[in-house]
Image (cartoon, rainbow, N blue to C red; front, side, top):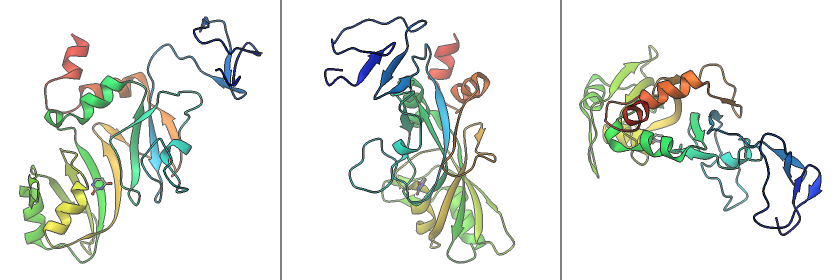
Length: 225
Ligand code: URA
């Protein structure tokens, strides 16, 4: 504000603590109108490959912050992360409580990925994935595993945790590394035909379903009571 980047109804306002009426006043930063939304918003992005999950650039590599409407919704932050080379569904919200709840290990929100693997997945490797392979930070919970092509190099896997590089480490642990990874769904939400690099705001019903998702106690239950 002190740099003169903020206008209220077209007039530059530099005084910190200046008040606006979100129903009447038009606030802009660097000429771009900021939506003073009265409630939190949650969006899904189809993250393309090569984009880093961070809101702050640390190099000249592309970041997810460049793809979501941070001008309109400055409080947006990613709920979890996808590796730079992973594509697919990534959620963002201005509601910090929602993110904390969905990522809490006790919630076990399901995430489904389509993994392309180096060689046809053996029955033995699939069995180990289903049981939950041993990783260096302990065994994973059981996963659902379905062969998604006849050649068994495309595998749909659903996990109920969110550990660092979890899916890649699971396939590595059973001897068949991942070549590419795509997240198709998060809890009840599916990416659908959202194109890479595009985002959309979730409907109230979708946010409610997300809030209820997972097997654990917590946010969904307390919010609705
Ligand atoms: N598991 C991974 O290994 N990478 C991702 O990006 C997401 C889940």
